[in-house]
Image (cartoon, rainbow, N blue to C red):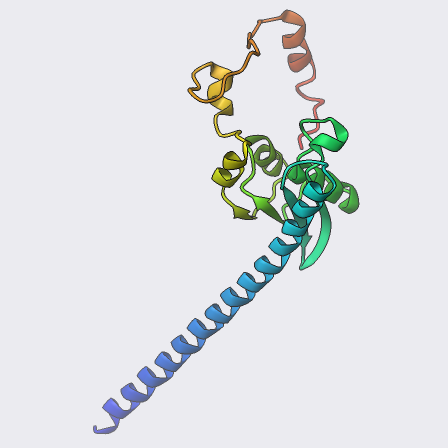
Length: 190
């Protein structure tokens, strides 16, 4: 019966070897993912540079990638277009949807030079983007004078740092209710 410990020892060695190989594969995959993320984030940073160099907007760039290929890239164009919603992320989402011919990007990744503002993050959510990779934290944008971190508080009028002069009021209106009720079975969900 001396062979029982030997077989057990061989099985343990094989199991240990398999575990080591799995860990190595995961580390290699993680490193590959880091390299890929770094490469596409560099493209987003170059887009941000374009916005500054051309005086088109703030230092914000975005890239949308599908299966390792850039589908769309954009930079902030708020100053160029005189449009406060012309954020890099939103422009990139618009281009990606147009290029792919669909309104959801659940098979894509977005890379942004900076942590997105609430509006841009909402657009990412609505586009069903499953993954976001960003470089600078929102505090970096805040330090430059960009601050969207208190938008919800500004809407409620409870913000210490950012105030809104916009009055928010809800009116229960029968025509509005009718539009929603009458069309409840006709709406195409997206």
